[in-house]
View 1 (cartoon, helix red, strand yellow):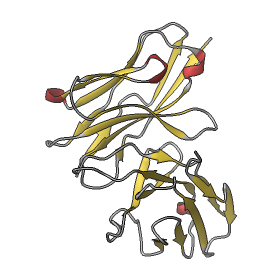
View 2 (cartoon, rainbow over the protein chains, first blue to last red; view 1 turned 90 degrees about the vertical axis):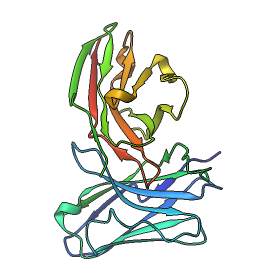
View 3 (tube, rainbow over the protein chains, first blue to last red; view 1 turned 120 degrees about the horizontal axis):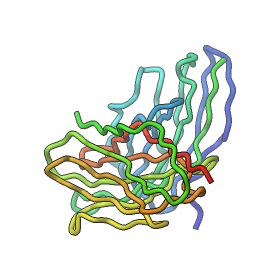
View 4 (cartoon, chains in turn green, cyan; view 1 turned 120 degrees about the vertical axis):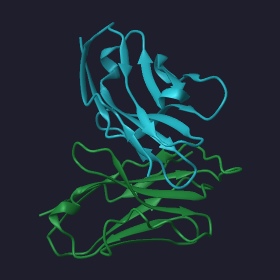
Length: 117
Length: 112
């Protein structure tokens, strides 16, 4: 079946503009995650959605970042008033329903490379 | 908060050499452990995982990892690397509290 897809694959924007990044998780996966990967760094957790529960936003670096997940499927990460330090690859991942607190592996999308000029 | 340390940032090996990449985590409770690999130009993909049971876990492409609870470690090994193993390797820990916590990655370069 189809994997996690993300769009756009590349986004170049000017400082101060808003951007929206989209993630389509694997069908049936209830958990969806956003991460950020900066050059030479590991993956930094941003936000996590699990079913209908309130999202875990504890990783969002500032209030310029927000995300929503509509209908338990597609998710959009929005960055307002972008700054140069926002330049990174933004990765989305999804995983099946957790069972008894044990999580399953996460399946990653190809990422969106964001460049803020 | 939990953290994951990958002490080898860049490893260069010749083909057929043995590989061991270190991964240590800081969390005292039950964990699930993962190694992900990112080949050049490709997605992150799962290499192997440990949830419970035998602490020696075998993954794809001849990789294995050993969970040593007393050392908070989950080192990745391969007896004989190939040029095609050139990639970036990420260790990740799941404490069941939220998303995975990733190490900073190890870039492996295998020379033919």
